[in-house]
Image (tube, rainbow, N blue to C red; front, side, top):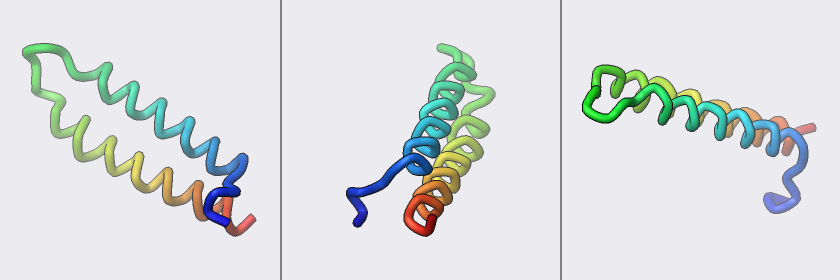
Length: 60
């Protein structure tokens, strides 16, 4: 059933893609002042979002 993921999973995937694009956008070459925000906070959001949306898709 893991390969039968649907709309909720795709919505979560879209959220994760948007967060990762934002993560790359806030980092500038030569300026690593936002590295902690980009790496720790945003990757944490990606992990939680993908897990949550995957669970929603499997349950609903």
